[in-house]
Length: 384
Image (cartoon, rainbow, N blue to C red):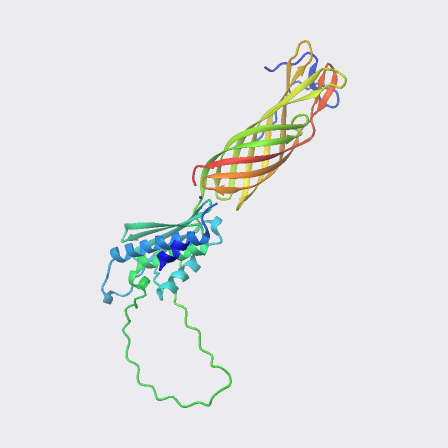
């Protein structure tokens, strides 16, 4: 029946006549740099999980130990881990209750010889549940369940896997061994009662007691990544500039730190009513600590670099350089596809000091206080 359902259903020198000066008129030749610090459908994914769980059930039935009924029901100690980024998935108490409801009893006991570890992880759009079983300190095996259908489907498959690892007969629906009890004395026949217009209320069944276990911290997610980005700049060079950046970084849970080098292609600023001009380009590095909230990230930006200007249309063209430093903020929203992440970004920064570009003592361009960029970033994650 499962099969039929599944059949229906991813050179620096001061130029002669080319200088950077402060707005007050003082020449700024080389100021000291400031330190800076799509995928298958939900139904097909669900079928994929059910097929994997079915294979696990057969494995559990064939290889699980079969104790005598007199030994009592099977028990196990549960070690359940769910990362903070999967907060939509059931917590430990809810997962335990799923297993209890499936087996019809509470199979968990602290200190039991059988240990079962359940670890939930996410890699892009794929959710994974890893179930490991140890018996008397010896590994008995593990099973990996993957799905893109969501946390409910993953938790259901993991609960079934845990039930099979504890007691395959209970997973099949076989009754648990009855507990010995003293025979109750015969009760007197009930007295007939007058019919009542109000329906009788039945007491809710008592919930099975479950072992109390202190919650354990979620697993730490950490990974390295590399990235490249194309950008459109405003305020970095005269007019609108185009540039590229390359960098690497490290992420741990919700926080990350990236270091990128960037370059803005030369843009020319002409001197009015003359054939002379100045070509300006920018090279720099940026440190960006970020906080991640699901697919959204917010970053603080600390940048430093050099602004280069070369005279054009003059007898002896030379290049002048000025250091700069800036600080700002940035936002990005990530789209995941396996190990790759595509992130549109927007950034805004403020220079700590401005400068004026002049050619033969004639002002050509003043660096604005504010600068910003729009970009598209492609990153590769080594840990997905």
